[in-house]
Image 1 (spheres, one colour):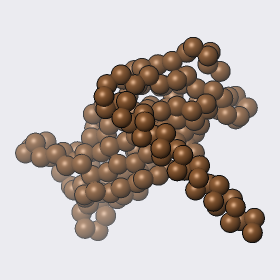
Image 2 (cartoon, rainbow, N blue to C red):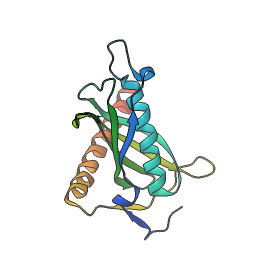
Image 3 (spheres, helix red, strand yellow):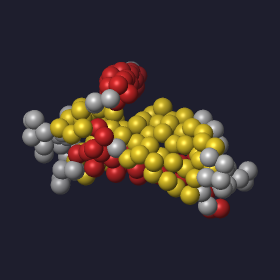
Length: 167
């Protein structure tokens, strides 16, 4: 459990430029990377960022706004960028962007984005408080504000689903 005044700068837990070389077993029948493979790596990396930020065991609660923007192909390298966007109590939003890079031509394309919500848990598996994230740059401050809007939307949808189940 973290103390009230405990906080960490967003840059301290961010992972920038994490490379993943694409191999044959990552490719589907049309020689592009399986979307599930990208999602798996993104989830693992988001988990690392969550644990690095909180110094606690963190589990994936949900993934939203998944966007496959362009295919990644044989011979390219995936480059992942990930950071905490905002913290609320025991949960936090982690943003992920993935680029496909051709190291021979220096071509670089944004191919994937998503938001992961993680919850920190104690030794008995119960949610536990996370240290706050301190945004410093203009981009971090923008993502911090936008994360709160996305959270409000997620909570609204959850309430709507609960309401429709009780009818």
